[in-house]
Structure formats: C-alpha cells, structure tokens
Image 1 (tube, rainbow, N blue to C red):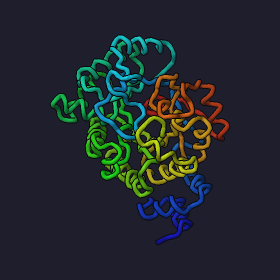
Image 2 (cartoon, helix red, strand yellow):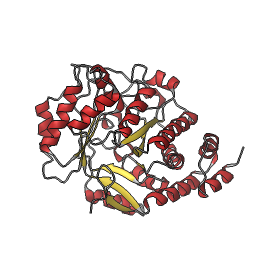
Image 3 (cartoon, one colour):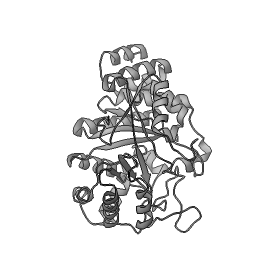
Length: 358
C-alpha cells in the first residue's frame, strides 16, 4: 500500500485515483494538503473563476409518497406545514421574476401521489410562457422515474415529453448514497440507485446535461462515499453529461435521524477536496451555500469548489427546514462577488450550462 505522500505526488503528476489510493488519501492526508491538491485541480479546470448564477427555486409541494429518514422537508398531506401550490399560485410566484435578470428556475419538490407527467409538463410550459428566456432545471431523478413509470412510458419517452415541454436540464438530487445497503436503511421505499442512473444516463443520451449529488454525514462510511464518487466517475466517462457535482451535507433538525448529529466542518472540507480529486472528469464542484452557510462556503473555495450556486431569493425551504444557518436564504450579486473575492478568486456569472454571462 502506498503512503499518502506518494499518492499526493502521483495526483499532482496527473495520475487518476484508484479507490484504494483515494481511501488512503482521504483518511491519512492532512487537510491542508488536500486543499492544495484540490485547488490545483480546480485551477486546471476553471483558473481563478468561481461561478454563480441568478436563480430561484419553485417547490410545488412538500407532500411526498416517500418517507426518507433524513428528510426534514416532507409533510403528510393535510398536516401542519404541508403545502400544495396550485398552478395559479406557482404562476404568481414566477411572475415576480419578470425583468429581474434571473437565468434559471430550479423546480423540485415532494413526489405527490396525485401528480402525473401531464401535470409536470404543464408546469414547465407555464413557467416558459411567463419567462421564455429562463432555463428550467427540473425534477430529481426520483420524481422523474415515478412520473414516467406512472405514465406507462419508457425513460426515454418520458424525458422526451418533458424536453418537448421546455425542460433544459436536470438537477442532481435523489442520489443520496448509492450503496444499496445504506440506501435501504435511510430511504427504503425511495427510487433505487439503478433508477437514478437510468434517468441520468438516458438524459445524457438525449443531450440533456444534469448535475449529481451525494448525501453524506449520516450512517455511511468513507468507503461508501468513495464508491459513490467512483460510480459517478464511471458514468461521466461513458456519457460526459454531468455539469456539476454537489456534495450535500446531512442536516439533522426535524427528521427521524436527528440523534446521529452532524459532521464537523473539517469533514465538509475534506469531502469537497476529495470529490474534486476523484471526479477528475466532472467540470465543476459546487459548494451549495444554502446548505453550508456563507462562512463555510467561503472556506470551501480553498478546497476545490468552483461554484457556489445562485442568488436563490429566499425561494427554497429544503435546507432551512433541516436547520441550515440561513433560514431565509438570499444573496445579492454584490454579496456573491464579495465572498468570492475574499477567498482570493474571481466571481463569474454563468447560465445553467456554464456559459459565462458578461
């Protein structure tokens, strides 16, 4: 077995990490050295740039068929805190952004028992009617798999229907952790790892770019995280369709796994750095500021992240309901630039597909 110093030298020389070497580096290398290695890799991809966009979220409902143990967002239908927006209510939310300069709407929510593929296509069409120039990044693979199976269509047929309605990209949610045994313990009734990969692989074949995520900091091991990242790297080798990877930290407020606590910031930074090093074929690593909080996100830029997500405009509740620091998440373009500049990088506005906006 090689030492972490030998592995770090080989990474610097451009050698691809194996799972065995990744484990040694993850467990044994000092945090500062991982930061050095990850920032060097980040600079190879994006130089001194750190990307952000002007975006908002649309969350149609938090009523969900599934009952994932880590989720603080879900509410039973009719219970306190549950919502089910009508099409008209969502149209009103979208109209607030006419002329605002936003370039992306991110649509995710619970897997509602009454909603079907026609409903989700209609929602995209209505958003596009109001904001025709805004990219629609819509629905996790779990939502997509459910609505498409419910319609009796193949994955390709269902995704094509959504593309025809105006879907431009797919977010990375629903991946959680790919290890099937861990998945069976934290989200036993949710869509499988195989379903997640089927949706993303098919989307890539249809020319739709996607993001990818990993939920970490709960009952999984470092080996499970490495396995997850290796599976994503293999998909990216095959399709090249992943735009960005977003490690998502488990937050422990108001869910049935709360007793396990949360991992420290040092684990967040180590996970970001190792994600950058293992996913050598994924262009962008995102430090999602809504999840980490602004201070940790600023630190994350010294550990390989080159994207901080967007302005958000207090339009998402998924992480605030789980105990994130920012209970009403919102950042201005000026805030973004100041944060990135303090970290020693250059803030660059992008669109959904990482085209720079000048």
